Image (tube, rainbow, N blue to C red):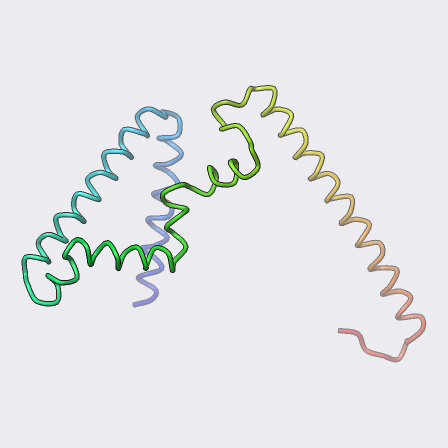
Length: 152
């Protein structure tokens, strides 16, 4: 059963990659398709909640709008989704850093940031090489002073 689940997840993961790669070439179409799908998804959720509320009993209490608002707010706060969904992590972080929105940044600013990131990557690679050299020296020193010890 778990194997079937993994196969289904893998299938949809690959399908998503293919569709996303294709639609990314057409941002306006991508926005339209995504927007319509999201609205229809929430419409389905809304109508399903209405149907369940009409069943009466505990479902009616749970899906009664004021109760539902309180319950779902608590769930969203507990899961960490409340702020990230309604504001978005990127917008929140850029506001805290007092950065411009990506759409307001100039091509030169984006290129400068890319150059800076490349420099950081190069520095990290150089630091890794230095750490590897230090590690080899420590390992060698340890084996010279403690030849009988087994190292793991």
